[in-house]
Image 1 (tube, rainbow, N blue to C red):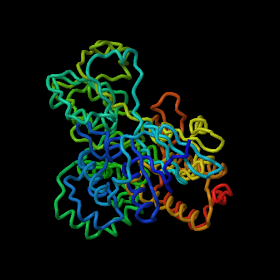
Image 2: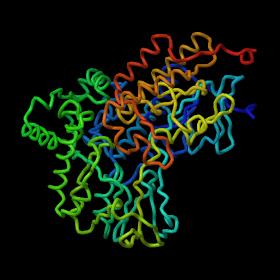
Image 3: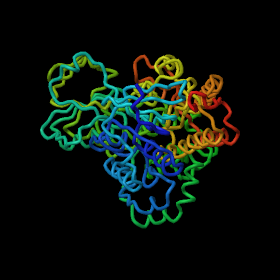
Image 4: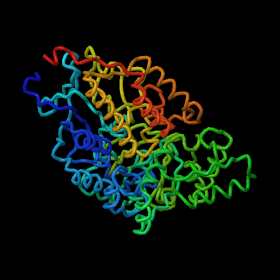
Length: 541
């Protein structure tokens, strides 16, 4: 099967932020023969697919949701807004690929249908949907934390005769909502970003809310040339600050709530609300995500803001979140709650009025029928683990990842899996992923992967693999960190709760800077938790 296969040192799957940087680092910095594959028609990963109205980075991003390693790259890209819009992120990634001549080593519109480890050859073999075969010593999975779209299984949903889109698979041509009755299911990040934009043109928008959200005002604005110049001048310090502060360079206030009277705390919340962005979450008081009493106070503050903004008391009531603030993904909004003051927007709370079925032209809930012409599914993803399971590589003995991960997403350092030698993940389960600035996280993870590959080559070794004991220890560490917070108390996609039958397991490392310290320590200490194989005789003969 592999006699005519193309041979590489490393194969990368994916060309988003992580995959593009891995290609640059392994090829240009290390001199390896590398090939990347992507099913999309161009670079961008999530940003190639997420073209829905209002798509933006869910953070105060510019210029920090970007690569950090190159001062020249920082200097030659002009960011436009403080919260970057999706097309500008995609344009940036296209610029990065052009600037470093990466496109020649990426094969687009190519899906990997099989990835299998050959124990005798100590190499991975991949097959594509075009019938091609390629092999490499190392397989780098940069398949994305938010890629596998989740489509709800409501009765009759496939019978709906109107136009239907998932926000994670939005068409590339412009979609018009003019004069249309639009139903939107879901009020996570893509729903909260798209609903205000859809409402501007649609005849009517019916929002089918599964879970109310704590959304914070983005306060998005143009970013000035003077601001960009200051960032560029201080870039080395900012990059180090990002590395030490969970991926963002913002200084956090370490004040304790117990030192302030209730009215003083409320004044701080008001100030941070007006400032916007994630500051209410990270910059109010120590312990917001671990102290229930303090979290309850912040939660009620945000609920109070929703009551102030939404004029209809009944609609405001439906929009009230009843879980701990911040334990679902915090969303930055640009007029989301204000949208419910429009005459052409209505809200259906699926907790009280669940969907029973679809017809060819409507959504039928327990208490009524809602005619629609268009359906938008803002229903999220099988997050973090879903992309790897979609690839489903086969490791030692032909054991598939689906078999390995049937009950838990066991791995070591969020980057390697026992039984799958010479395979690495970028932003896998147990890595900081979405809890850290993902471009910088990809850079730091790739540096660890590159160092491990160099170690193998320098020592004339054939394979590296995590141990079962290391996986067990890592799983315990992830849970110990998470259990010191309020995150596990909420049913969220962080816990896998949005996918029926998915194992309940916290999917991220909450101490990003500590995590990357660990990667460095493991490498410097001789790779504790890994076993290495010498090069097999079959390979060298």
